[in-house]
Image (cartoon, rainbow, N blue to C red; front, side, top):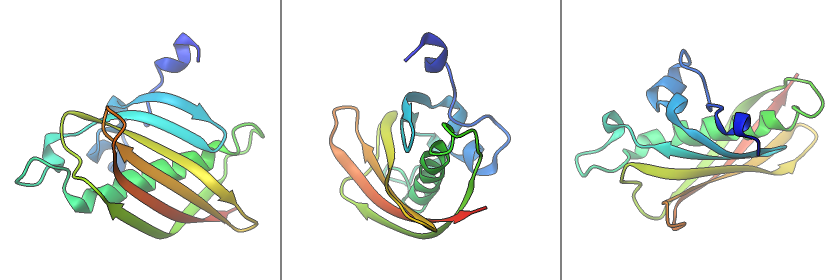
Length: 140
């Protein structure tokens, strides 16, 4: 990955969900067609009383990452496609806590009208914290 690529931010300020999770502070670690990995920080305003990511906010991370991974499929073709989240399942294994964590989303099935995307939250040591599957409807 080039030095310029390493400096890219995930989502510029001005997007409601992105601003909530402070996505502009994330570091893109890897981006390929159908795949994105980021190093994200955990904003204090998203914590529950135990200093863990509040469960209701996981879906925001999953949705943003899934859509980003899906949209990366069209980058090679020069076409910007939209998608709509139609289903999301989140499995919580271990609480997300600490200052930083890793997110990885990958398109695991590119169908005619839908996409299936997996998203994994891991700690910096690589332990799996959360796993999600998202179904996206392809919109023209």
